[in-house]
Every structure is written in structure tokens, then in C-alpha cells.
Length: 393
Image (tube, rainbow, N blue to C red; front, side, top):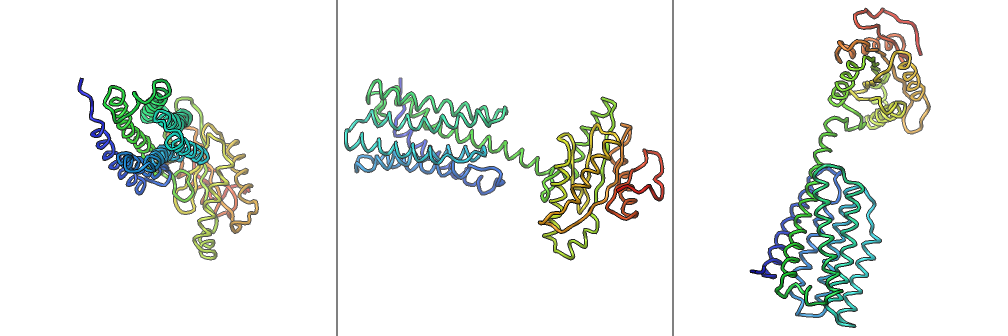
């Protein structure tokens, strides 16, 4: 059986890890800010590379192995920090510092005070296992069911098992089976698996990051960037789903067309920054007044649209009055403002989105003409909106 040359494996793994760190850092610079952890993983790989380089120079000074192991444990720890950031978990710096401190203290003790190679291997491996097992837990708890998360989790489990196995072998059998610079079955297998698993785990992390990137871009394409509610495209997608459900179940739904009164005066008198705050405030107030099954969108400018699925006119008017009351409440962070509503109930599945919006907009226009800060009800499809409707406010 031909065994792998340890030095060759280390050099190849080191060069590939350095290359992957560049890829990760480039992704950090170009990916949206919602995707965290890439920089930590990139720095972690750099530290692993530095640790491997110092490890190859360990015979020059007794201090070098201490520095090498410090860099290696730092590198593994930073991958844990990066994974925590990715899943939106507060970084466990206390775990990082505790494990790093124990590792350095153990290496110093078993190198300078009571020299024992097997004890150093056991100390490093078991403490590195803490970092890897923490990441397994994070993936299990916060990862989704997509293949990318399963792939990343499986790689992390394998790496956890590999480092733990080496630590246990060092405790049970001593240094003969765990010295990676001595040719043998286990050192060869460990070097091959250990070094290339680092690279595979990096690929796994990039896979879940790419999955998050895809989800983020899809979400951005359907959300208004200022108010973070649906835009026209997102609203059209939601309406198509609700319309199909309405047709299948024979229900009705109601559309609210909402417009801020005299919004141009707010921009002219207070500036566009304040105008933006008003738009954000409107979106937030409306969202809080709705059920989880309802939907709100910004159609551009100061125009908002609300879709109330499985909701008749009476229920829709209660929602309208609740929104109106909430928007009238005084607030200190934005100037006072009012809004007008157009309410259109869709009872026929044959009516299109455009048709409902036209009826709601006509009712909104009537509310504007009738004094603003009020709502008007659109007649059913096929009927003509009267020139002046009964006052409702």
C-alpha cells in the first residue's frame, strides 16, 4: 500500500486553503451585508495557513510550536465565529477565548514543563472538537432543510469526528499513532481527510452563503427598499396566489388604495429625508394594524395598497377605520399627516387585479375630492361610481 507523503499533503492543503481564503474574502466584499461570517472564515483560513507554515518550522525553536498551535486554534475558532454570524447568533467570544486560553496553556505545559507529544495532540484535538461541535449545533438548530445546509452540516460532523478520534487515539495509544510526520496508515488518512475536509467545509460554507444570496436577491426584487414592504412585483405575486385561492374556495377579498394627503407639502416644507420617514411610518403603522394573512405594498411615491384576503366589505371597513385611527395618532418623530382611502371589494374571481385597482383608485380619488382624510367605497365591478358618495370618516 502506497502511503501519502505527509509533506506533500500539507503543502497542497495549505496552498488550497490560501486560495479559498481569497475567494471567501472576495465574496465578503461583494455579497450583500445581510450575509455575515465570510470575513471571519477568510481570516480563519489565513490563520490555519500560517499555523501550517510555522508547524513546518517547528524544529527551529521551542516557541514556534506554541505559535503554530495558537494560530491553528484561532483559525478553527474564527470559523465558529463566522458560522455564528451567518446564522445571526451573537458571537461566542467567551467560548473562543476560553478554548484558546486552555489550548495555549496546555501546549505550553505539555511542551516545556512536562514534555508529552500525545498530551499536546489530545489537548489540541479535543479543544478543536469544541469549536466544530458548536458549529454542528448551529447548523442543526438554525439551518434549513435545503441540500446546502445538509451538505455543510454533514461535512462539519465528519470533521468533528476526525479531530475527536485523533484526540482519543492520542490518549489511548500515545504518540506513535498520531504523529502526522511519521508515515503510517492513520497519519496518512488523517492528513488527507483533515486537510481536505477544511477545504470541503469551506466549500460547504460558500454553498450556504450562495443559497442565502439567492434568497436575499429574490426577496429584494419583491420588496420596496425604503419601507421594506412589498413592491408592485411582490404584490402581484401575492395577489396571484390569493386570487387562485379565492377562485378555488369561492371567497371574496378587499383592496385598499391608500394615499398620503398633501405629501408634496411635507417634502417641500420639511425636506425629502423627513418625507422618507413619513413613508416608513405609514408602512409600519399599516403593517401593525393588519393580520398576518393580510398584505401591504408600496406602489411608488406616496401610494400604498393593502390586500385583505377572504375579507368582505364590512370587515374591510373595520380594518380601514383601525388603520385610519392609528395613522391619526400623534407621533413625535414625524410631522402630522393624514391619508385617504379607496375601498374596493372583489367578489368575482373573473375580475383582474387591474380591474380591482382601478375601482379602488377611483374611490380614492373620490375621497380626495370630498375633503381627504376619509375613505370611500367603490361600487361593485360593472357599476358606476357616483359623482359624490356618502361622507365616511
